[in-house]
Length: 205
Image (tube, rainbow, N blue to C red; front, top):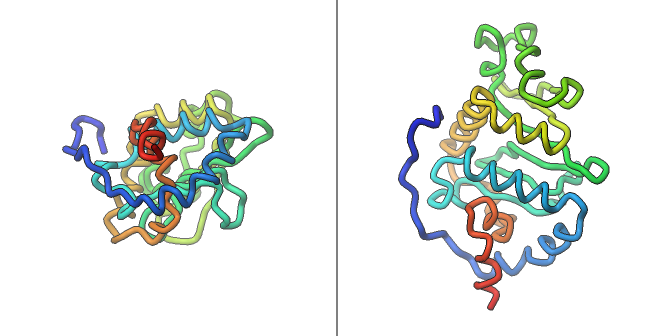
């Protein structure tokens, strides 16, 4: 979580050809959206920096959905256990994001007090203060952060304290058991998250 070491991953991935083919049409539909390249770049960073040993844990402990049918009309969603903890949405021709993290990682005293929220820090995590807002979902020590715009999302993901908080939340929920969203895993999106962008082309052949 501190980013000081890299856990040993595997070169092999848990493949399902049927599942890969199932979501190719949705992936191709996403590629036609004006936000496609920004979405893929954010997913690449998220997969590289925010998910522990991503190849070893793919689908069974985390998954990514493409144009999911759940409410909200997300472009993509990353899930673990029973939690949908990261999503990207269209915002005009740009994008906006939802992050779920532990509230205690964003309070001034690391407590669960909403009145202790470190709003000054949140504003420093984005390019302009107007790009960030927040909400309080149900559940103990859960906090929702909304970030607008590609540049601000990139800055948020590059902020050490925020990144550490994202990793901690993801690890917490991956450790709660097998992923309930395995059936909606989009391998074509995961290829970008895992730096395996040519995989869907070669396997299709």
